[in-house]
Length: 113
Length: 115
Image (cartoon, rainbow over all chains, first blue to last red; front, side):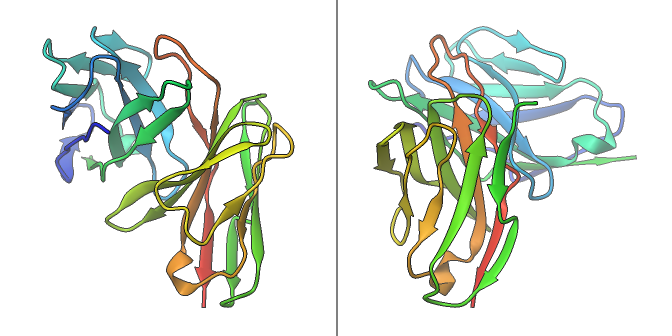
């Protein structure tokens, strides 16, 4: 399984962009990068995913490098409610079609006033 | 509303007393799985199910059992709980996907303490 590496913690000022990096140097060509976040000890919440191209949705943007060895999650205007642990995950899809999420330990983002 | 519902949310039990954590989803998803979350270890998969009557071990299956008799339900069974099973447990569900589509939905978690 491909492994992801993230910084353990980051700080961001409210209203500023939060850029969360992730290294996944062993990712395979057909493995997607997913981002989830977990607020306190609630269930992880889906944010965004991508394969090769950059992606954007109402929550965030995902920038994937051309060699796919790393990516960055961007929260364009962080709010206090974005304080959470953010997980960069490679989704492994077995030949049978089953999906498995391989979680790392994530980045604890603290958004301050 | 799409939901994965777990019960109980909080439980303190004694070593050896069998317990079941229920999980139900209302999205008609084929795939369901159980994770446990421990400090410093992140989320680790316990068991998963690809459909009714189809289950398999994840990364940390020891001490757990599961069953999938109905599509919507995927209970986690601890036949003889031990203190090292004290953890936060999450149930998750999703549908088969192609092209990377398909979100995995998580329940709100079940705090289990075994004394």
